[in-house]
Length: 437
Image (cartoon, rainbow, N blue to C red; front, side, top):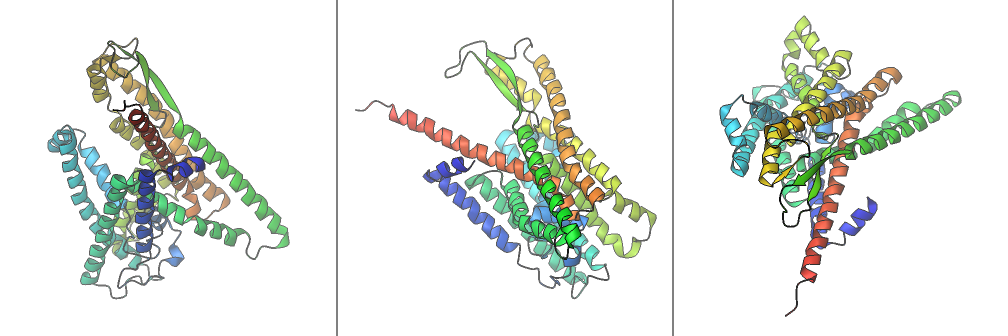
């Protein structure tokens, strides 16, 4: 990986993309420390590791702890994406039609996603602000009132849209998926804080009798993390190669080839979706905290949408599994894949073109998604279980989600850099072999 980055910096075009990405991420990190006016910035320090704060901090890079203009991060945008994609599943006919219109339809769907993001961001920001302010020990809002909440909601909504725009700029002119890169940067920025929390919890004021136990525990924790990282990297790069043969010779193509399908087709998107899906109801429940906190329905809903509880962990894992199957079929559409194979004059040996190929790919996706969903759910659930067993900090308990995102985004970014390097080599080869006049 280091050698790939070193070689990439020697190429002018790739170096520009890397530097542009870093520039945008620096802007994002600066914005994460600009506190919203009318907010007591130190109010959330005591609950910085609570469930909702930890989830949203994952998407905002610690912005919620400072209650910055980027406190909501890209969470509303991700939620809007989930809703729009679900509505394309033969629920809203117009969205289904747009999904089949190629680039023009994609632009229309992106526009609808952004409109929905504005609504969700405004509602979610007011809900979180009102919910935290109801806690008597916080006093988050200095002068609570309709105008104050509306102003805070507008500022946070603007911050979400700016963050989304920065992500789009990374996608267009930088490296990797912009939204994923922003989440990646936020997680990496919080690593020193996590290390300091472990140091405070296990080494500060530790007696001689417990010091060696703390050292042994931390060493074991590091070893476990390295093993999990290795396992995650191995699974994320594993794929199933489907043999492909051509009925006619296509220029530049071999007579036989293969179609690679990753074991975890959906990548880290299901984890991001599930986390966002958990965070949004928690934010909405904050609106009702002041008047309904003692009621049964409120306590039940709070327990369900909290990953630190047993019910919440079960719901979180279930959502990851469901979103894995859903997004796998979004990423690899069996119907379109079958049509493209026919247009290219190719087929899967032993499988008839058309509907039978579509059925074959669908069954294969179901099997791969079963393995991928269990893998994602297991890695996301292990730290939550460790938190309950060993009493780790709640933010550390969410480390499985962060680990999956970091490893997944890092692999995708390195693969994109390698692809750009390979493309440049091919272009150079073609240019060098042209006959001279």
